[in-house]
Image (cartoon, rainbow, N blue to C red):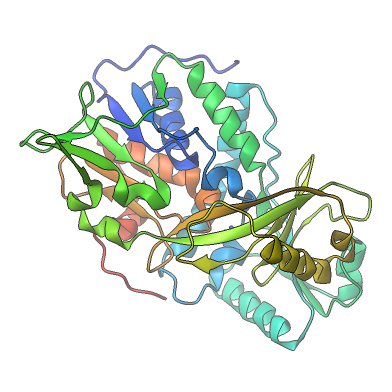
Length: 387
Ligand code: GLY
């Protein structure tokens, strides 16, 4: 480890974080390692092995949020600002763990193979123009020179310099290693002993409780008078968190496979150092972690339209992830009506991208510092308006 912890801040609250995915791990990193605040992270499941492990690690404010119909009006701003925090976050986490996170600030290519997809690209380009975000339409021949793995049936392409990627599995592995080595952090592989003692929610030995349990946040258990209740009873806004399943696969790297992240509608191909990830289905209401062979076969066929070499590439792994969604596709970030209870959940398709900015907001809120004004737009009790 090369990032040396300073002595614990003696006036800081002791923070319990419930949920050990990338959001909880990043909040613990921000608090314990960057700000020397004592933190305990609870999760009965293996740390970092839920949606954070299933993800593809795309850091894509433009493609994911600039033209997203029905999304929170400030989701793009949060994603764009979140992407700006990634270079320093990747450097700090990589340094703390002594590992390479496979971080790249960009670019990605958005592709179209028919008229409808071309119209979608033009819509995205207009949305980026309106926001003053850099992008460039590429002629198919130029796009295929840039990335020769793209199918010759390409009709249109958009170069997205803002959309990067990181190896999400390397990130959570590094966060766990860094926290295990930090004297201010304790990782407990068990359910948090959360209780309502009649005066409010309480976790012995802690002053603040931050729940970051993804699509399971509403169901986190609270002990009260010898019974177990779900956390949603203490904050009904958690009822809004839903789940969207996604089937995914990876194939072995090869000379004919892409070196750049490629997007087309719901399909993406995200090359990492040791695998090429292909995603993903979007299945509202589905909370299964089991891969389904027929859906995976369809996914591979769809991806092969972008890049023919995907059709025959040796399969490495298939899996399914569960995205935590909300009605406006933006996370719930902030304090709740219950004193001392904070929530950071519902990051939908952008959990990896939004981890550093969520961690910064939550640390500022919990420590009582100035909080970026944008954070107010995502408070858990907000009314749902969409763009
Ligand atoms: N961010 C990509 C996905 O959710 O599939």
